[in-house]
Amino acid sequence: MKMGIVGLPNVGKSTLFNAITKAGAECANYPFCTIEPNVGVVAVPDERLQKLAEIYHPQKITPAVVEFVDIAGLVKGASHGEGLGNKFLSHIREVDSIIEVVRCFEDSNIVHVDGSINPVRDIETINLELIFADMESIDKRLDNAKKKLKADKKYQEEINVLEKVKTALEQGKPARIVNLNEDEKEILKDSFLLTMKPVLYIANVSEEQLTNEPEKDEKVKQVIEYAKNEQAEVIPLCVKIEEELASLESEDQLEMLDALGLKESGLDKVIKASYDLLGLMSFLTAGEPEVRAWTIQKGTKAPQAAGKIHTDIERGFIRAEIVSYEDLIREGSMNNVKEKGLMRSEGKEYVMQDGDVVLFRFNV
Image (cartoon, rainbow, N blue to C red; front, side):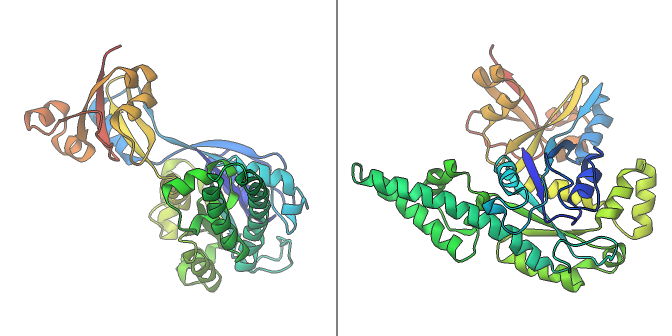
Protein backbone atom coordinates (compact mmCIF):
# COMPACT_ATOMS: atom_id res chain seq x y z
CA MET A 1 0.00 0.00 0.00
CA LYS A 2 1.34 3.43 -0.96
CA MET A 3 1.01 6.69 1.00
CA GLY A 4 1.82 9.85 -0.96
CA ILE A 5 3.37 12.73 1.02
CA VAL A 6 2.19 16.00 -0.54
CA GLY A 7 2.22 19.72 0.24
CA LEU A 8 3.29 23.09 -1.06
CA PRO A 9 7.05 23.61 -1.63
CA ASN A 10 9.12 24.10 1.55
CA VAL A 11 6.56 22.86 4.10
CA GLY A 12 8.69 19.94 5.33
CA LYS A 13 7.61 17.09 3.02
CA SER A 14 11.07 15.76 2.20
CA THR A 15 12.28 16.28 5.78
CA LEU A 16 9.31 14.20 6.98
CA PHE A 17 10.08 11.57 4.35
CA ASN A 18 13.73 11.46 5.48
CA ALA A 19 12.67 11.03 9.08
CA ILE A 20 10.11 8.32 8.27
CA THR A 21 12.32 6.28 5.97
CA LYS A 22 15.86 7.35 6.90
CA ALA A 23 16.33 7.26 3.13
CA GLY A 24 18.30 10.50 2.88
CA ALA A 25 16.14 12.06 0.16
CA GLU A 26 17.55 15.41 -0.95
CA CYS A 27 16.02 18.25 1.04
CA ALA A 28 16.71 21.92 0.35
CA ASN A 29 15.25 25.39 0.83
CA TYR A 30 13.97 25.98 -2.71
CA PRO A 31 10.82 24.94 -4.62
CA PHE A 32 10.77 21.71 -6.66
CA CYS A 33 13.75 20.17 -4.93
CA THR A 34 11.79 16.91 -5.29
CA ILE A 35 11.01 16.21 -8.95
CA GLU A 36 10.90 12.45 -9.35
CA PRO A 37 9.26 10.99 -6.24
CA ASN A 38 11.42 9.29 -3.63
CA VAL A 39 10.04 5.98 -2.34
CA GLY A 40 10.69 4.30 1.01
CA VAL A 41 9.28 1.21 2.72
CA VAL A 42 8.63 1.55 6.46
CA ALA A 43 7.85 -0.99 9.17
CA VAL A 44 4.55 -0.53 11.00
CA PRO A 45 5.37 -0.24 14.74
CA ASP A 46 3.91 -3.33 16.45
CA GLU A 47 5.01 -4.23 19.98
CA ARG A 48 3.14 -7.56 19.67
CA LEU A 49 5.94 -8.98 17.51
CA GLN A 50 8.54 -8.49 20.25
CA LYS A 51 6.26 -10.12 22.83
CA LEU A 52 5.73 -13.14 20.57
CA ALA A 53 9.47 -13.31 19.93
CA GLU A 54 10.02 -13.70 23.68
CA ILE A 55 7.87 -16.85 23.55
CA TYR A 56 9.14 -18.37 20.28
CA HIS A 57 12.76 -17.08 20.02
CA PRO A 58 12.47 -16.93 16.21
CA GLN A 59 15.34 -16.67 13.74
CA LYS A 60 13.75 -13.48 12.36
CA ILE A 61 10.98 -10.97 13.00
CA THR A 62 9.13 -9.50 9.99
CA PRO A 63 6.80 -6.53 10.59
CA ALA A 64 4.03 -5.28 8.31
CA VAL A 65 5.13 -2.43 6.05
CA VAL A 66 3.73 0.71 4.41
CA GLU A 67 5.29 2.39 1.37
CA PHE A 68 5.76 6.17 1.48
CA VAL A 69 6.20 8.28 -1.66
CA ASP A 70 7.65 11.82 -1.44
CA ILE A 71 5.91 13.77 -4.22
CA ALA A 72 7.03 17.10 -5.76
CA GLY A 73 5.71 20.30 -4.16
CA LEU A 74 2.55 21.66 -5.73
CA VAL A 75 1.71 25.25 -6.69
CA LYS A 76 -1.48 27.07 -7.71
CA GLY A 77 -2.36 26.12 -11.29
CA ALA A 78 -0.97 22.57 -11.08
CA SER A 79 -4.19 21.15 -12.57
CA HIS A 80 -3.39 23.21 -15.68
CA GLY A 81 0.25 22.13 -15.74
CA GLU A 82 1.82 24.95 -13.70
CA GLY A 83 5.12 24.10 -11.95
CA LEU A 84 5.39 20.32 -12.08
CA GLY A 85 1.59 20.02 -12.03
CA ASN A 86 1.07 17.20 -14.50
CA LYS A 87 3.82 15.07 -12.95
CA PHE A 88 2.57 15.86 -9.46
CA LEU A 89 -1.00 14.77 -10.28
CA SER A 90 0.10 11.59 -12.07
CA HIS A 91 2.17 10.58 -9.03
CA ILE A 92 -0.80 11.16 -6.71
CA ARG A 93 -2.96 8.91 -8.91
CA GLU A 94 -0.56 6.05 -8.17
CA VAL A 95 -0.87 6.18 -4.35
CA ASP A 96 -3.64 4.71 -2.18
CA SER A 97 -3.96 7.64 0.22
CA ILE A 98 -2.50 11.06 0.89
CA ILE A 99 -0.49 12.54 3.75
CA GLU A 100 -0.79 16.32 3.38
CA VAL A 101 1.93 18.28 5.20
CA VAL A 102 0.83 21.76 6.29
CA ARG A 103 3.24 24.35 7.67
CA CYS A 104 2.09 25.90 10.98
CA PHE A 105 5.39 27.40 12.18
CA GLU A 106 7.09 30.76 11.56
CA ASP A 107 10.74 30.82 10.45
CA SER A 108 12.20 33.73 8.48
CA ASN A 109 15.05 31.50 7.27
CA ILE A 110 12.68 29.18 5.41
CA VAL A 111 10.82 30.92 2.60
CA HIS A 112 7.13 30.19 2.03
CA VAL A 113 6.05 30.02 -1.59
CA ASP A 114 3.17 32.47 -0.86
CA GLY A 115 5.23 34.74 1.43
CA SER A 116 3.24 34.12 4.65
CA ILE A 117 2.09 31.31 6.94
CA ASN A 118 -1.59 30.45 6.49
CA PRO A 119 -2.29 26.71 6.83
CA VAL A 120 -5.93 26.75 5.67
CA ARG A 121 -5.01 28.74 2.54
CA ASP A 122 -2.26 26.18 1.83
CA ILE A 123 -4.66 23.23 2.25
CA GLU A 124 -7.21 24.89 0.00
CA THR A 125 -4.56 25.56 -2.67
CA ILE A 126 -3.74 21.85 -2.84
CA ASN A 127 -7.30 20.57 -2.45
CA LEU A 128 -8.66 22.92 -5.12
CA GLU A 129 -6.04 21.72 -7.62
CA LEU A 130 -7.07 18.12 -6.92
CA ILE A 131 -10.75 19.10 -7.28
CA PHE A 132 -10.08 20.87 -10.61
CA ALA A 133 -8.27 17.79 -11.93
CA ASP A 134 -11.20 15.56 -10.83
CA MET A 135 -13.77 17.87 -12.44
CA GLU A 136 -11.94 17.51 -15.73
CA SER A 137 -12.00 13.71 -15.39
CA ILE A 138 -15.70 13.68 -14.44
CA ASP A 139 -16.67 16.00 -17.33
CA LYS A 140 -14.92 13.78 -19.89
CA ARG A 141 -16.58 10.67 -18.50
CA LEU A 142 -20.02 12.37 -18.36
CA ASP A 143 -19.79 13.41 -22.01
CA ASN A 144 -18.88 9.85 -22.94
CA ALA A 145 -21.70 8.30 -20.88
CA LYS A 146 -24.30 10.70 -22.33
CA LYS A 147 -23.31 9.74 -25.87
CA LYS A 148 -23.63 6.02 -25.04
CA LEU A 149 -26.98 6.57 -23.28
CA LYS A 150 -28.74 6.94 -26.63
CA ALA A 151 -27.88 3.34 -27.49
CA ASP A 152 -27.99 1.82 -23.98
CA LYS A 153 -30.13 3.02 -21.05
CA LYS A 154 -27.84 1.30 -18.49
CA TYR A 155 -25.55 4.37 -18.67
CA GLN A 156 -28.18 6.46 -16.84
CA GLU A 157 -27.01 5.03 -13.49
CA GLU A 158 -23.43 6.03 -14.27
CA ILE A 159 -24.57 9.53 -15.25
CA ASN A 160 -26.50 9.88 -11.97
CA VAL A 161 -23.41 8.97 -9.91
CA LEU A 162 -21.10 11.24 -11.91
CA GLU A 163 -23.47 14.19 -11.58
CA LYS A 164 -23.77 13.62 -7.82
CA VAL A 165 -19.98 13.78 -7.48
CA LYS A 166 -19.70 16.73 -9.89
CA THR A 167 -22.13 18.75 -7.72
CA ALA A 168 -19.91 18.21 -4.67
CA LEU A 169 -16.75 19.12 -6.60
CA GLU A 170 -18.36 22.32 -7.87
CA GLN A 171 -19.07 23.25 -4.24
CA GLY A 172 -15.36 22.79 -3.45
CA LYS A 173 -15.91 19.48 -1.63
CA PRO A 174 -13.83 16.33 -2.18
CA ALA A 175 -15.43 13.24 -3.74
CA ARG A 176 -14.64 11.14 -0.64
CA ILE A 177 -17.31 12.90 1.47
CA VAL A 178 -20.11 12.22 -1.06
CA ASN A 179 -22.55 9.65 0.34
CA LEU A 180 -22.20 6.72 -2.09
CA ASN A 181 -23.29 3.10 -1.74
CA GLU A 182 -21.01 0.21 -2.72
CA ASP A 183 -22.45 -0.07 -6.24
CA GLU A 184 -21.93 3.65 -6.85
CA LYS A 185 -18.34 3.43 -5.58
CA GLU A 186 -17.76 0.54 -7.98
CA ILE A 187 -18.98 2.70 -10.89
CA LEU A 188 -16.44 5.41 -9.92
CA LYS A 189 -13.55 3.02 -9.31
CA ASP A 190 -11.88 3.29 -12.71
CA SER A 191 -12.12 7.11 -12.69
CA PHE A 192 -9.17 7.16 -10.24
CA LEU A 193 -10.41 10.37 -8.63
CA LEU A 194 -7.74 12.18 -6.61
CA THR A 195 -10.20 13.56 -4.04
CA MET A 196 -11.63 10.07 -3.41
CA LYS A 197 -8.37 9.08 -1.71
CA PRO A 198 -8.38 9.24 2.12
CA VAL A 199 -6.27 12.06 3.64
CA LEU A 200 -4.23 12.46 6.82
CA TYR A 201 -3.11 16.03 7.63
CA ILE A 202 0.27 16.64 9.29
CA ALA A 203 0.45 20.02 11.06
CA ASN A 204 4.18 20.77 10.98
CA VAL A 205 4.93 22.83 14.12
CA SER A 206 8.00 24.27 15.84
CA GLU A 207 9.59 22.63 18.90
CA GLU A 208 8.06 25.37 21.08
CA GLN A 209 4.56 24.74 19.66
CA LEU A 210 5.00 20.97 20.13
CA THR A 211 5.89 21.21 23.82
CA ASN A 212 3.04 23.68 24.58
CA GLU A 213 0.01 21.52 23.70
CA PRO A 214 -0.02 21.97 19.91
CA GLU A 215 -3.78 21.27 19.68
CA LYS A 216 -4.31 24.64 21.42
CA ASP A 217 -2.11 26.54 18.95
CA GLU A 218 -4.20 28.87 16.78
CA LYS A 219 -2.82 27.67 13.44
CA VAL A 220 -3.12 23.99 14.40
CA LYS A 221 -6.71 24.58 15.56
CA GLN A 222 -7.49 26.01 12.12
CA VAL A 223 -6.22 22.81 10.47
CA ILE A 224 -8.23 20.62 12.90
CA GLU A 225 -11.43 22.60 12.20
CA TYR A 226 -10.89 22.33 8.44
CA ALA A 227 -10.22 18.57 8.65
CA LYS A 228 -13.42 17.97 10.67
CA ASN A 229 -15.50 18.90 7.62
CA GLU A 230 -13.79 16.10 5.69
CA GLN A 231 -13.83 13.63 8.60
CA ALA A 232 -10.03 13.61 8.32
CA GLU A 233 -7.47 13.19 11.12
CA VAL A 234 -4.78 15.73 12.02
CA ILE A 235 -1.47 14.86 13.66
CA PRO A 236 0.62 17.81 14.93
CA LEU A 237 4.34 17.06 14.88
CA CYS A 238 7.63 18.88 14.64
CA VAL A 239 9.23 17.46 11.50
CA LYS A 240 12.63 18.87 12.51
CA ILE A 241 12.54 16.99 15.84
CA GLU A 242 11.39 13.81 14.10
CA GLU A 243 14.41 14.01 11.78
CA GLU A 244 16.69 14.35 14.81
CA LEU A 245 14.98 11.41 16.56
CA ALA A 246 15.32 9.23 13.47
CA SER A 247 19.11 9.71 13.49
CA LEU A 248 19.43 8.39 17.08
CA GLU A 249 19.75 4.88 18.49
CA SER A 250 16.66 3.47 20.29
CA GLU A 251 17.92 4.26 23.79
CA ASP A 252 18.80 7.85 22.88
CA GLN A 253 15.44 8.26 21.18
CA LEU A 254 13.63 7.29 24.39
CA GLU A 255 15.80 9.74 26.35
CA MET A 256 15.00 12.58 23.94
CA LEU A 257 11.27 11.78 23.96
CA ASP A 258 11.31 11.77 27.75
CA ALA A 259 13.09 15.15 27.81
CA LEU A 260 10.41 16.55 25.50
CA GLY A 261 7.61 15.02 27.60
CA LEU A 262 6.40 12.81 24.74
CA LYS A 263 5.21 9.19 25.04
CA GLU A 264 6.00 8.17 21.45
CA SER A 265 7.44 9.73 18.35
CA GLY A 266 5.12 11.59 16.00
CA LEU A 267 6.31 9.28 13.23
CA ASP A 268 4.99 6.21 15.03
CA LYS A 269 1.63 7.99 15.21
CA VAL A 270 1.82 8.84 11.49
CA ILE A 271 2.69 5.28 10.44
CA LYS A 272 -0.04 3.74 12.63
CA ALA A 273 -2.60 6.30 11.46
CA SER A 274 -1.58 5.71 7.82
CA TYR A 275 -2.10 1.96 8.23
CA ASP A 276 -5.52 2.58 9.78
CA LEU A 277 -6.43 5.18 7.14
CA LEU A 278 -6.13 2.53 4.45
CA GLY A 279 -8.46 0.21 6.39
CA LEU A 280 -5.61 -2.22 7.05
CA MET A 281 -4.89 -4.54 9.94
CA SER A 282 -2.46 -7.36 10.75
CA PHE A 283 -2.82 -11.02 11.53
CA LEU A 284 0.18 -12.78 13.02
CA THR A 285 2.04 -16.04 12.46
CA ALA A 286 4.51 -17.29 15.04
CA GLY A 287 7.07 -20.09 15.24
CA GLU A 288 10.80 -20.72 15.60
CA PRO A 289 11.65 -19.82 11.99
CA GLU A 290 9.78 -16.49 12.02
CA VAL A 291 7.37 -14.21 13.87
CA ARG A 292 5.55 -12.13 11.29
CA ALA A 293 2.76 -9.58 10.80
CA TRP A 294 0.74 -9.95 7.59
CA THR A 295 -1.19 -7.01 6.14
CA ILE A 296 -4.81 -7.48 5.09
CA GLN A 297 -7.87 -5.28 4.57
CA LYS A 298 -10.33 -5.19 7.46
CA GLY A 299 -13.15 -7.63 6.68
CA THR A 300 -10.91 -10.19 4.92
CA LYS A 301 -12.01 -13.82 5.30
CA ALA A 302 -9.66 -16.62 6.39
CA PRO A 303 -8.94 -18.20 2.95
CA GLN A 304 -8.02 -14.83 1.40
CA ALA A 305 -5.80 -14.07 4.41
CA ALA A 306 -4.11 -17.44 3.86
CA GLY A 307 -3.52 -16.39 0.24
CA LYS A 308 -1.34 -13.53 1.51
CA ILE A 309 1.13 -16.16 2.70
CA HIS A 310 0.87 -18.33 -0.43
CA THR A 311 -1.75 -18.85 -3.14
CA ASP A 312 -1.50 -22.65 -2.62
CA ILE A 313 -2.68 -22.21 0.99
CA GLU A 314 -5.76 -20.27 -0.17
CA ARG A 315 -6.48 -22.80 -2.91
CA GLY A 316 -6.20 -25.81 -0.58
CA PHE A 317 -7.65 -24.11 2.53
CA ILE A 318 -9.17 -26.54 5.06
CA ARG A 319 -9.38 -24.48 8.27
CA ALA A 320 -7.64 -21.81 10.33
CA GLU A 321 -6.49 -22.62 13.87
CA ILE A 322 -6.71 -19.30 15.70
CA VAL A 323 -5.87 -17.91 19.10
CA SER A 324 -6.14 -14.26 20.09
CA TYR A 325 -2.83 -12.49 20.73
CA GLU A 326 -4.01 -11.48 24.26
CA ASP A 327 -4.83 -15.10 25.20
CA LEU A 328 -1.48 -16.38 23.92
CA ILE A 329 0.54 -13.73 25.80
CA ARG A 330 -1.45 -14.27 29.00
CA GLU A 331 -1.06 -18.08 28.91
CA GLY A 332 2.59 -17.93 27.82
CA SER A 333 2.59 -20.82 25.32
CA MET A 334 0.47 -22.48 22.65
CA ASN A 335 0.28 -25.67 24.75
CA ASN A 336 -1.30 -23.74 27.64
CA VAL A 337 -3.74 -22.11 25.21
CA LYS A 338 -4.81 -25.53 23.87
CA GLU A 339 -5.18 -27.01 27.37
CA LYS A 340 -7.56 -24.21 28.34
CA GLY A 341 -9.60 -24.61 25.15
CA LEU A 342 -8.74 -21.14 23.90
CA MET A 343 -7.75 -22.20 20.38
CA ARG A 344 -10.56 -22.00 17.82
CA SER A 345 -10.98 -23.87 14.55
CA GLU A 346 -12.48 -21.53 11.95
CA GLY A 347 -13.75 -22.22 8.43
CA LYS A 348 -14.00 -20.38 5.11
CA GLU A 349 -16.51 -17.76 6.29
CA TYR A 350 -14.47 -16.58 9.29
CA VAL A 351 -13.64 -12.86 9.14
CA MET A 352 -10.10 -12.27 10.39
CA GLN A 353 -9.58 -10.01 13.42
CA ASP A 354 -6.61 -7.73 14.15
CA GLY A 355 -4.07 -9.65 16.23
CA ASP A 356 -5.29 -13.16 15.38
CA VAL A 357 -2.37 -15.58 15.75
CA VAL A 358 -3.09 -18.22 13.13
CA LEU A 359 -1.96 -21.53 11.69
CA PHE A 360 -3.60 -22.41 8.39
CA ARG A 361 -4.36 -26.07 7.56
CA PHE A 362 -4.50 -26.86 3.85
CA ASN A 363 -4.17 -29.53 1.15
CA VAL A 364 -1.60 -28.99 -1.58
